[in-house]
Image 1 (cartoon, rainbow, N blue to C red):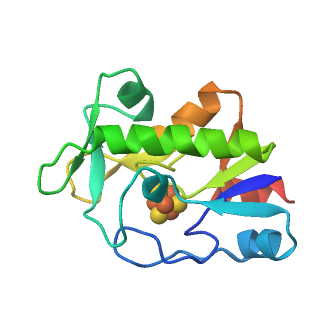
Image 2 (image 1 turned 60 degrees about the horizontal axis):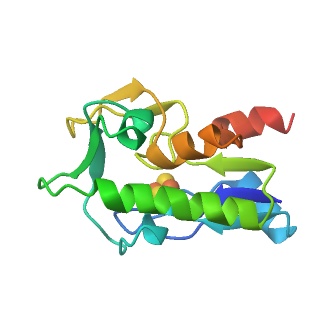
Length: 152
Ligand code: SF4
């Protein structure tokens, strides 16, 4: 089974109430080969919600207690992000996921890029909190772009 970001599956769960539907991911869902998951909703957030970014590092640093996830207005939401990551890991184990396809650049789901923490649109290399935890537990995580190459 493949676990995929819900927003890639066309579900309007992004912070601003939108989705970023990916045709290949939708085909997996329609073929019963994938299950959608949104780490931020599993962590306890509603949709819509405030944008948040990792401040002081990347998802690895958040897991190690060296960086935080902060909403634009300043609320520390680190614990909710970590809860969402662990809930996603639990789900991945339950469905025996072999591959996980997550939305690039998100503070939860990014796999090679995340926002810089300044709420300026600038990106830096690094992975999100959920991606970092899944990788630490041996799961193969791909972005939607990497997944397109993976299918070739
Ligand atoms: Fe949810 Fe991840 Fe999509 Fe953000 S990027 S809306 S956390 S599935």
